[in-house]
Length: 317
Ligand code: KDG
Image (cartoon, rainbow, N blue to C red; front, side):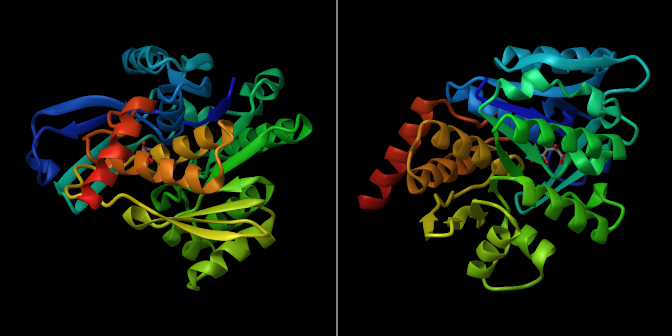
């Protein structure tokens, strides 16, 4: 296994029309969740990913497992819960600039994840453990499951990559969110915050300072995402900005950060230098925004290379 991830995936419903969702009567049903978005992203790039989770033993849970398995992700660590349901998530596209999400996931099967769901051998079989700040926000037992996974990863020298993915709707209090997210960031080797997430965790500062704060907090590599502008990486020795790929028409921005994370993981596993890794991550993040759905725009290697090549051609013409 190249990467193992832990978290909730949900059935995603999107109105077939743009505008206020209250007027929508036709919806498309897809599946999404930050961690499976990343697992699917790295699988499309030719790597092996595994997903640890729980789904309801219901129709949507069964369809969700089939979908993720169909994308080539290992689902051997996904349990079907007979006591709780698969969570739901609605994505309202009011306009291209105004996308809103609504969760129906409190008490879901995935929120019942606990340390007993984390198999030490499975974590030890991976090169990377991918974590997001969403999972510990779901419940106390999910937070404990994440801590258990970190303990196993440390024991077996598995690289931990952490995306804070702050979802205020899931955290009861900002203080609690900050405390838990900084605690996990301190355990991670690589952290992937967005600028607004860095500001949420450390207050308003210059971009360069965010790099230092996360390094001082314990990370070895900090990758600060700056949307379509690009991203910067910070290590103790170096800091570099890598420009992004501005997209003329963003169809759906949700999932771009997960595509970016998939690009980072695949670049690092291919031993690309950090600058090339970030260029790849920027390209994949941009490609995800061009398509409706969290995972539908994730490219394979050829598609990604064609996108990068064509974009460069456009610039030089
Ligand atoms: O990053 C995209 C995710 O936000 C989306 O797939 C839903 O996992 C999700 C969440 O918890 O917000």
